[in-house]
Structures are given as C-alpha cells and as structure tokens.
Image: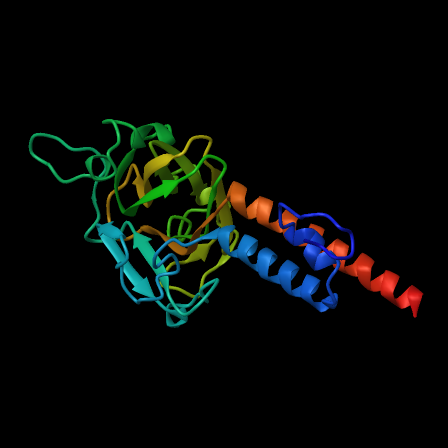
Length: 270
C-alpha cells in the first residue's frame, strides 16, 4: 500500500523508479558509456591472428607455396603491430591448376573450379602462393585487410602488359586486387617496385562459413628472375551490431535523458 497515493502498485517500473530517485546524471553517462562500449565491442569481430602478431600462421591460417611472416626489417613497416604475411612467386611456388601429374595446386588448395585463376589475366597464369582460412560471418559484415603488391617484372621492362603478375582474393569466386599497373614506387625490399600499402574490403550479403584465400600469381613466365609478392596485414571483420545491443543502447540513452531532465528540474526548484 502506498501511503501517499492510497493505492496498490501492482508493477514495479524501473525507469520511473530511477527518474524519481536522487540519482545524479553521472549515472546516465555511466550507462551510456557502458552500453556504447558494448556496442563498439560487438561491432568489431575478431579474426584470430588477423595481424599475424603470433609471428607465424597459427590461429587458422594455412599457407601454400612461398609464404612467410616478416617484420619491418624486410623493408616495409606493417600497418599494425610488428608482423605481416609475405606471399611470393619465388622458388617454392606451386602450379595454379592441378593435373594427373601434379596434384598440388592453388585451385585445389582454395577449393576453386579448375581454370579459375587463368581467367584473371588474358595471358593466363603459371604458378603462385597463397594463404587461406575459414571465416564464419553474418549478412552485412565486412571483411577488410591491408595489402602491398611487390614485383621485379618492371626491373628491365617498363611495359606492365608484358608479364602482368597479379594478386588476388578468393571467397568462393576469385577477384584480382592488384597487378603490375599498381606498381608506383621503388621498394626497399628484395623487390624492385611496389604499390605501397592499400586497403581491400568485401561485404558479405549472406551469412555462413566462407573459405578466404589471398594469393599472388606469376603470369606467363615461370622463373626466379622476375617474381612478384604480396604483403598482407590487419585482416579483420567489421560486424553489424546485435539487435539486443541496439535495444540496450536505446534504453541507456532513454534513461540518460530522464536523469538529465530530473536533474534540471531539481536545479530549477532550488
């Protein structure tokens, strides 16, 4: 029984209770900060070892061909942390397409249809290296990573069309992300030229588990004199917020508004 109003309260209203309490607006700031911090955390999904900061390909990464982890001692500073992945077409690379005499190839490694990689450039490709991992995502989430394409193809030939080596990404289908036309400056690495670090992003329209592949390919020629390479760093997934997280942020903002209103009324009554 409420002695003031003479009626029974059958339901406890937490918002009204907070509004009528002596809580200071600082609580509003706390609730907003805590909720938005949760929203920010949920908006950043973790790709295990996405920056290769373990110094190896652990955390779900699987390499094939000439693949390694390097630091800024290689001649390029990573975009984050101390490590970055290096994939090249140098010795140790594997063929792009399998045959009855060659059962180890990039297309089988990346679960791609035979001949997929040859469609990326008119002259076709010969060999290359790649890294892969599985990703489980929701619709609307965005994959992003940093890449730097390196090459010796322009060492004695300024015509990029001669042997147009390239870098690619595969997520069910393949897409070229760089080629010799992207080489814009001298490199401090063992390669002659590079593109400099740039960003790639891909938004998933459907949720599910995908096989992500990132690689580099030698077009037409196959030798160690004019190889190409790709530096990869900071692989991450930007998530869409959960519905409950959105609802929680709205509640916190509503409570904050009520508390500030009450505080303003209290000041006016003094």
